[in-house]
Length: 499
Image (cartoon, rainbow, N blue to C red; front, side, top):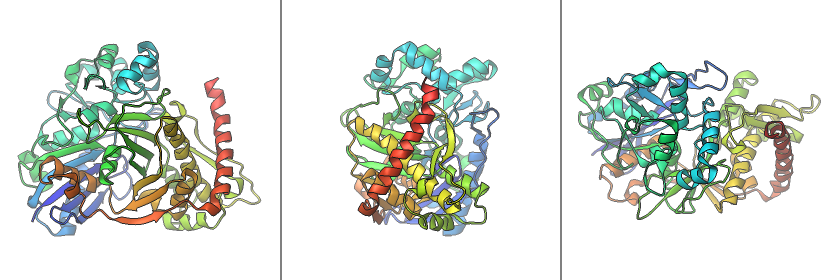
C-alpha cells in the first residue's frame, strides 16, 4: 500500500490531500489555517504575503493529515504541488527570502506591462508570448528592479510560489515551461525562455530557475524537510503546476475542447486547445498546459475574475455576519432571478484582465430601499460573479473556443444551487461537478510524474461525477435581461477610464 500527497498553496489557505495509489480514493484532506491567511496591502493596489506563512501552514496541514488518517506518512511515495499563479518570490544565494511575495492580485506592475506591450509592439508580443507582459511575474520583477534596487541586487533566483515551496522541500530551484509561460517568460514559437522580455526589461536569464517537465522528478525531500513534514527522506517531488492548469488536471481536462472552471477567491474558466491562439487585447490569456509537448501541443486559455468568493466573504463579514454561507445561499434562492433589478459589479480585488487591466472597484447599482433586502444582495452578488465570468467567456468565444460542457469541483461557489444554475443558464453550458479539488489533482499529478501511474486513465481512478446542472430554460429570459442590464452598467463604468 502506498500514498500520494498533494498540496494546493492558495492565497486564502493551504490544502493537503492524501490519495491512496491503488484505489485512487482520498484517505484524508486538511486545510490550514481555518481562517483565511492575511493578504497585506502596504499601498493601494498592492497584495503581498510572507512565503514563510505558506511553509508554516503546509506543516500544519500535513500534521492534520497524519492525525486524521492515522497513517504513517513515510508510506507517501511522491509529492505534488499546486500553487497560486503569477506571484513573485525572490531569494538570495543562501536561499533566504528577500521581501514578501508579490502575489497574483497585486496591481503595481500594470503600467510597466502596458508600456512594454506598446514598446515591443503588440503584434510581436502576441506572436511570441501569446499575451501582453501585463501585470504578470516578469513585470513584477521589473518593478522590483526599478523601485527596490537594493533587493534586486541581492537576488539570486526569481521564483513562483510553488517553486519556492518545492525549494523548501528539496533544496532544488526548478521551473517548468508551464511556469515560465504564466510569468510571460516563454517564447512559444521557439519553445524556450523569452529573451524578448528578458532583454527589454534588462533581466539576466540567470535569475530563472533550471527548467524541467511538469511531470518529472524535480528533486527529493531533504532530511530537514522530511523531518519537518514527517515524510520519508528522498521522497520525490514529481509534479508542480499553477492552480488553474492543475484544477484542469484534477478534472481530467487535458484535450482540445475540454473546459474547467473554479470559483474560489477568484473565478476562472480554463479551456484547452492545440493551437497557440490569443486575444488581441490580452483580456484572456493563453499558457502552456500541463500535458504540453512539442509533438502534441496543449495550451490553456484562461479567463480570471479576481473578485469571486471574496465578494461573498465580504458580504458575509460586513453585512451578514449572523448567517452562514449555506444560509446566505438559501436567502439568495428566496428572491427571483435578476434580484428585482439589483446589480453588483464584483471587481473589488485589483486590476481585472478581462477589463483591460482596469481597476474599477466593486459597486452596487439599482438599490431600492423599499424593495431590496439582504436576500437580494446575496443573490445579486452571486449573479454578478456569474455575469463577470460570462463576460469573459464571450471573449473566449471570439477566439473560437466553444463552451458546451464545463467541469468543476463540487466546492466553493459551486456548492450554491443559485450560483451553479445561474452559471449554466447564462452560459448555456451543462455544468458537471466532481468530487475532486486542487490538492487531489496535485497528488495524482505526482503519481504521473513519478511513473507510479503509467497513463492518465490510471491516475483518475476515484474521481466521480457528483452533480449535473443543465441550463434552466424557464429562467433564461430573466437572466438574459439582467445580464444585458449588467453589461450596460459595466460599460458606463469603463467609459471614463477608456476615454
